[in-house]
Length: 124
Length: 366
Image 1: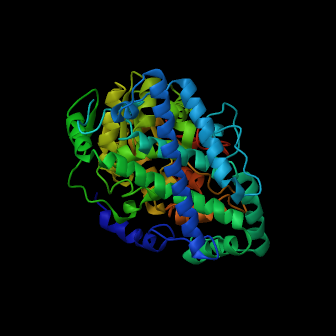
Image 2 (image 1 turned 30 degrees about the vertical axis):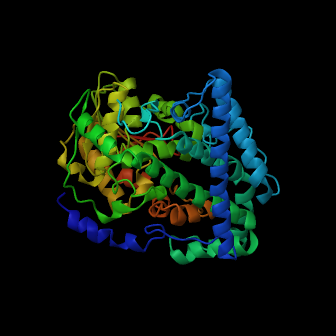
Image 3 (image 1 turned 90 degrees about the vertical axis):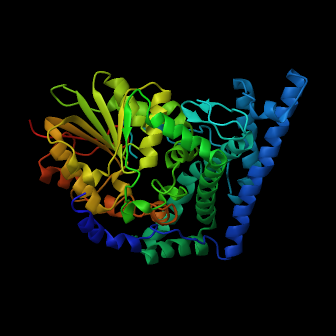
């Protein structure tokens, strides 16, 4: 670490760069819209979490005849349950938030970074 | 490895400890899909519109706070859909890192004990310094991760789960890192006995390199002690024999000369300031044996005679400022190829079409 002091001097400028420190950006004319949209996005997560728990409980009752907090926590869904859950979750998001855009369909492919592993070279 | 007794054991996701509660996991899956529908699935429609306006108005996209605010103002005034996109990006980014930290935080003491135990176990090893003083530039909360890479003792664990949410399905089973390891070009003479994976974070590429070159001695280094400690734990879960070392890439002059056959670095350079990039590539040249190969995957930078930059747009602007990527603009405005050539590297490429997987490949002359 011989030239640590020199490096610190050379990188003194970074403190002024955007993104070095945490910002509180505003993307709408009224900052309250930023706050309300964030609250709504988070609220959606809380509603979905309850819905998921209800689905797990119903599944456990139908298959095991019993439900406990530990059974819910350690529940390992099979592929069918997981796929159905993902589909319902995507529909939930689209239904609640799609109206923010003119057109917010569910993307056909959820792997948005697939181009990274495709065998064919592609531009980034 | 059981890590707790207060919460039901929810097992692992691959080598990664599962979230502490099902509610945390469910919430994070929701965030992943929210980003898919409202962000990634919309970028191609929304970004070109505001990018065209940026160009039309001649807004200078520079790495300054004023320039970033001008782009935000444009979104506020004329492109509410871009505002929605940016708000979803920022709010979901903050929400998932917070939830990951909160969930693992319920078992923090257990995880710290887990790392203490795995520090002493094998296969492989980890070397780190509990008294290491991090340089200021490294203390950024990159990607909004709470505490960043160096400021939280469980940063590696947070990063491992958080990046699953960030990049979605591509993270499953480390498939991106597998693809990279398969495509990395070895030295032309084929000799690969020692590999160094710089800025290895949680060691995904490091482990995949060991799988591809099973007879090689494979090392991963990173400035962050929490990252290399967790990388070692993760490698043990997969029974991969690799060695991790806490070392800033600018301090690699402390390692032997002409030692490694292959040095790899994945997405470090846009996350460190230019003086660190320059020291790193000089150190790599020194560390490589004659005929050794340096493989880099990162953002594209300036090409000879290039007039524009891909990062001079809406995403580039708000990503650097609002997703805490302060060093990316200066990296994309540099010319890494020129720097490599000046050091003596011989480049095997002119213009990498896919910089993330295929990478930039260059050799130290034999």
